[in-house]
Length: 93
Length: 261
Image (cartoon, rainbow over all chains, first blue to last red; front, side, top):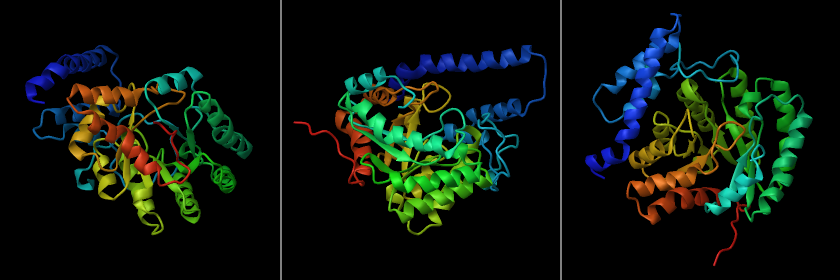
């Protein structure tokens, strides 16, 4: 498929998701401020979108990933929260 | 499928599903005893195949204690000790879905013991990789465990729930890679087709999350529609969503599909 065909197929959907992200950030701004590492992680991931290169999805996922190597001592609950408190270390990749 | 209604089986058959492969997984709560797992394994190997058979759908299973319940090493070892007695059952394809959840030391210990069990009983392996921020680290740890046992043949192991940042490391190590489709929060059909386009069709398959949470038993047929929208022909779609899983699963002599004319 050429770029125009892909745009015909996906542009409106991607546009809606982009506006969802903008609205999410506006919602955060309207809320009572609270320190939370997920906000910074999200901002780091967003910056990956603007960089050139073919692997944005991979880079966004890495920006949100835990890059440490040692197993955790214990489980901190069952669920993942979606972002690592520490920025991803590119030297680990 | 144990947490799905029978309407799901009907919908899957109507959409062209030829078999269902159900791994042992977390029930949404921790089971309180090894006996609870015994009953669950009976459900997976006896009752559920009969329920699927009412819709002419072959049902296969994988057995293990899921990594979410591996923190209690004592309980996990009791469950591991029960598994060999179930391996001969006619719908059991191997050990799974083993792996990691929060990448803990105890989870790793139980993963290693599952891998040893699979090697000792010459079983195929289905691996669960952690979700979200834990996936990249967990996938690396899992690959280290699998590669450290020389008896494990990568071509008989599928590493599931890969995403764009883990797909390449799994394929480069010689393992099969599974892309699990979800209606929200994780991989969509469009992204799955993107990964297929960048990685190619070899040792890659798609599967549906089909559990007690928000999930869709028809996600794979929907990915096929996504491929058609992008102009792929039927042969290419058939290879990815049907021939590839059949090739991997046919390494077990127990895996048989219904004869068709």
